[in-house]
Length: 236
Ligand SMILES: C[S@@+](CC[C@H](N)C(=O)[O-])C[C@H]1O[C@@H](n2cnc3c(N)ncnc32)[C@H](O)[C@@H]1O
Image (tube, rainbow, N blue to C red; front, side, top):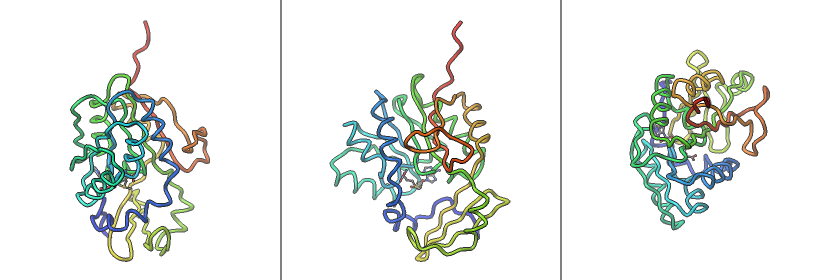
């Protein structure tokens, strides 16, 4: 099975696919409320998080995504909710902004759709270049669990949308293929890989949580939830 970062057909079932994921919304809304400048979402998708962020802050959210089908949904959902999103068909590896951002965020493990460390490094460097000096970059990603990998590999699963799972262990990759068509792959990264990306991009960790209710990250956590900022120079 060839890797496919994000297949357009996946968009047809995305509302159902993402329906169980609600815990992250208040986390990103709170960060947006604390940011007193431009807000940017990487891989904005159908606006699942950006719309509540725009509603809570009364501000527009700029969002990039490479999927025309997902952006169409975002446009429709935003109009229905009565909010403005500044949607751009663009790749997060090439992020540009009109004005430096106070908050750039990337929910629902979307950085894991980038296949290589170089793709992520490029993204982190673009993020750092687009952030204000007092800005923040936040994202979440799953912690790879070999026990789950062994359990799910080759399995058919019914929820949230019937699909098959394939773990390409040697490639650090998970392929999800929906029964009705639509494929998506995610490449997992270790904690040290995330820390390396933060370092090379000139960022630093402000907080690392293990849950969206801000519990500390521990060796048993299932999710990395990072808040980072441009590296502060030591005071002389
Ligand atoms: C799991 S969805 C997340 C959507 C939304 N952020 C959310 O939280 O519901 C992943 C999204 O990543 C987008 N995507 C994948 N690779 C991308 C890239 N290189 N640049 C921008 N968007 C990308 C897909 O098109 C898809 O909309």
